Length: 135
Image (cartoon, rainbow, N blue to C red; front, side, top):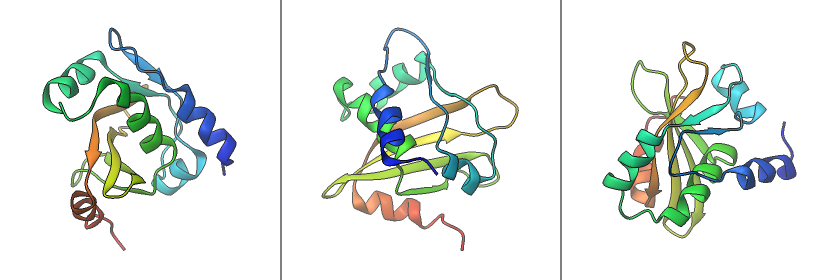
């Protein structure tokens, strides 16, 4: 299990470059174990950054590092993102009625886990995602 210091180092290492693909650290050991997947670096493609800029105008550029880092390396919950596909929502509470979310593709076929989407969630939206948790 990663210490809080190790998690914070990963969070602090996230510095999104808007002009190129970004390679981020692998997920935390406990998250990998929980999901039953092997460790790989995380890829945030420039095309996903551009898509996010166009479709999530509520997210300021200055918030990208926080959303991605907090969600991936300090999630409160990890829930399936799509039925029968290797997608997971990493969700972390950061304030009153404010959560971060990253949708990650965790396919075994790629050299990286790939970020598909990321943005803010209100508590109502978070509860909808939590309904996907299987007991």
